[in-house]
Image (tube, rainbow, N blue to C red; front, side):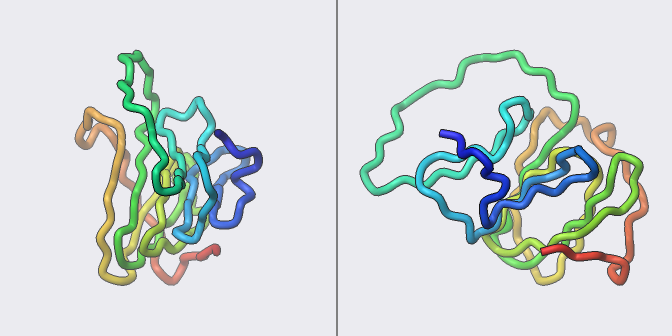
Length: 153
C-alpha cells in the first residue's frame, strides 16, 4: 500500500529545513497505480494518492472514534486553477525558499511558516484540522518581498 522512497518519485517534492519536514508538494503530473501514502503514519494529517481502474470496488467502511492529540495545525491546499507562490520559513521565521503551485497541484503544509502570493487569478481549496481556534491558531509575521523570492522547481 505504501511505496518505499515515494518522496524520491517524480512529481513528489519534500520541502525541508535541516531535518524538519515542512511540506509535501504533489504535482499534478504525478501518477502511480494503486494507493500511495505520501506521509509517515505519525503525522496528524495524512496525504495519499489513489489511482484505480474502472470497476475497482472500495468496500463500505466507517471510521472509528479514535482519540488523537494534535500539536500543530496542518493544512492541505488543492489548487483548482491559477498560479500561486508559496514562501517557506523555519520555526524562527527565517525565509528558506519558495515554490510555485499550479492548477492540479496539492500541497500539505506540515510545519514551519508559510506565506503566499497569487501570481495568476487562483481558486484553491484548503483542508485542515478543526476546531478552528481563530487568531490563537497562528502567529503572523512580516514576510519577504517578491523580488527576494528564491523559487525552486
